[in-house]
Image 1 (cartoon, rainbow, N blue to C red):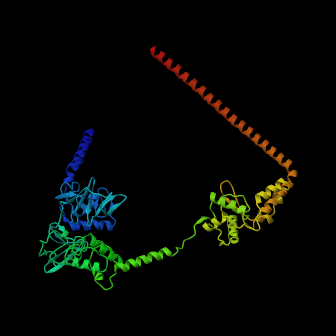
Image 2 (cartoon, one colour):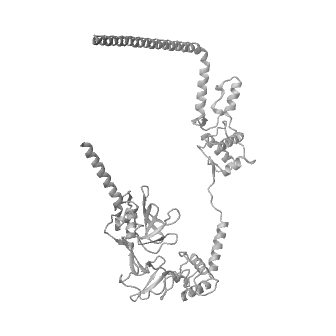
Image 3 (cartoon, rainbow, N blue to C red):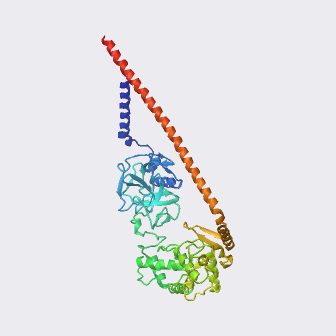
Length: 516
């Protein structure tokens, strides 16, 4: 019975999980939203720093599909399969706020101007990034749970956009309810609409990308045409920026000329003629020839003015290198250095460099810069008139003469701290007087060595004998312990064998008794 209950429980669990897998993707939420609303929702998630949570669909913690689902509901899994319209991103994304973006295993939200928001992963959270390069997408699509405008006004992120034929218009103007509205290259209206439900009185002016309309635009850029473009070309020619034909067509040559004007005037260089036309038509507008002359003068002045350069430091206190060895060797040859080269730039090397710099008319910085290095290895280098005695050579000479190290006195050393380097390149600073004092101690020890050598040797022999006695004693104790342990184990093994034999005998006797 118990096994039957367990079997039934397992079967019910399997049925439940299978039901979720099969029918779970078909569960939808009744909520819906607008494209602009979804775009604002996604931007808000980015600015508030929502975390990425796999399977999350609540504000503050979402995954890629959960970011969309938390706003408009609808399909949680098969968003692109149930979309109302889709297209290739490579072919261009329509000017529509809040479109869905899809690539294998991932979805995002299109904002505007080639920007998107997506919940990317644990290490990234919610991201706001330009589309392109490695951040590419395969399809754009209209979500089934979102409504997108066809014609009329739409508000997004504090700005107002006007939709025609399903996309917001750019670089043009419209007369709506008697008011002329101008729309920039991003589609933003120059004026807040008085009635969001109003429609344009002349919507047959063609696509918004044509750049022309029944009323004058607020900006002119590449592709524009008309009387204002003719006026812009004429003024650019007067100022010397434009030498092409005045034909009223804003082409590449006109754009290049306008960019040159903007740069000369210190304006934002974007090639778009907008409010900066006030500067273009003013009496203070820059002239191309004068701007060129000013540029050439600035360039000439820059070339003739010597640049203040910071001297390059080749080596300084604390360095350790082959270059320092070469410098120390040269200082030794010129009489500024009193030790054998070690490669370590310490206090003695710094004092030697200062002495060389003073003797050769340089600033005594104690640092090997380019000027010091060049003069040090040149034929013009001035040697030390009072050379520093080489300590190592003097010691060698004293030893070979039989006088011992005590003959090296502090008077023959450089008046600076000595830097001694061991095999691990550690430096030890001692003054010349300290070295002399240590040398005198060595001399005294040498004089007293004849009196102390025999007792010292006897003490060493005595210590060695004591050590050997200790070793023998320890070995004896360990051997005794091992012998006792072996003996004990052997005895226990014998008792065990006797016990086994006894058990065998008893077993045999029991068998015989049973037969009798």
